[in-house]
Image (cartoon, rainbow, N blue to C red; front, side, top):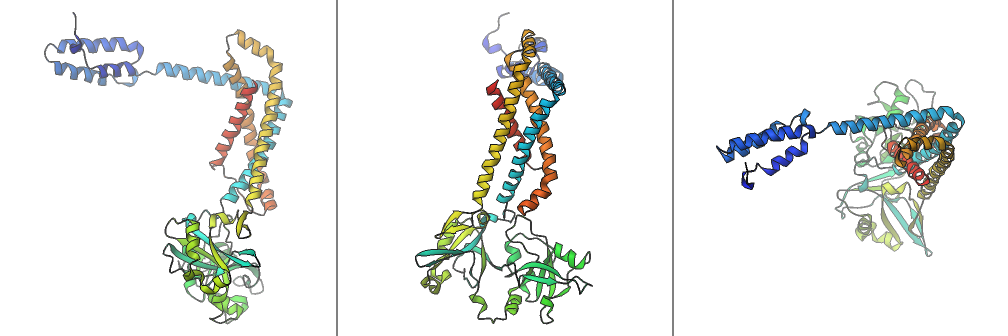
Length: 476
């Protein structure tokens, strides 16, 4: 019977059936669907089309979907991988000396590079843990005298930023490593024991500007002139497991300078530029120095600004040098301000002639290059050893070619062995880094930890193994 084009079932449904149906089932299912279609079309064309579409959908079942071919291919792939790894393990056992040198050489290079990477990552992480860290700026002061510029990381404590609506908060901080920032504290019940701890004096916006979480007590502890906020570590050293809130402390063992513990805050992380065990209000500093209310505003302290919008450092600097902020008196003394991103200060704090000329970033860049070169040298060394060893396995290669192995399969075998070496070396290097981290942290003066869940480690392994594979493939 001849059917015209108009009597054919919906083509999109027919193509869908051909797309998902297994080849060994397609002829039977498609034939039944067509037969039912031509039977029904004699009664109703619309009903026949709907019935055909329904049959296509109805036969969309797990057993009818194309999968045996892909499963077969996956099984072949798994068998090939098992063979590659099995042969690689045998070769490692046959040549223990060569395998040891390969793994040891790459392990040494990866360990050095991994230690450098941990240090570099730690350096770049400074001050980035604060909420909206990209909106926190440190105010620098440039002084022009005798044709040269001097840059200081402090500014006038009486700075008026009311004319700058983009600034949400201003916090003033006094830091130092000597008295009155380093003070003696006596643990509760041990009046003869003295623990020296370092702290800061700050305005009450300290904890609302920076991310130093309050774990217990008042959320704004520095609003009181006789309050003190201490770190969790300091609270444990002074009071053990007992609550420190409400305890009184004598500053410099002076009965006239007694403060009350208003808050306990979380220990500042190691990647914070501000490190302190306690925070006191400026009223205590004024009493320590013995100066009056008029002299206090004349001092220069570290000033930090937190903006309420994404304003650039250049724009904010222009607003800070307005006469309403810097004042006519300072302008006449050729004093100017600069808003500098806090996240850049740790690595780029070197200024010459009023311009930033780098800083610790120079060492970070240098050691980053050294780390990359160490990895490249380790890879080249491993590739050379693998290539030299491959030339001695001509008999194995010949047998594989005779049995039908193609060039890609042989390359996969050698690359699989190389990947195992990289994997073993990486595992050993991680263990070695974990063992040497305490000594490395002592060497650089910063505690660094290795997290096996860090996203950097898998990326590091992929880059090393990928570079190794590419280099080996070029030599093959």
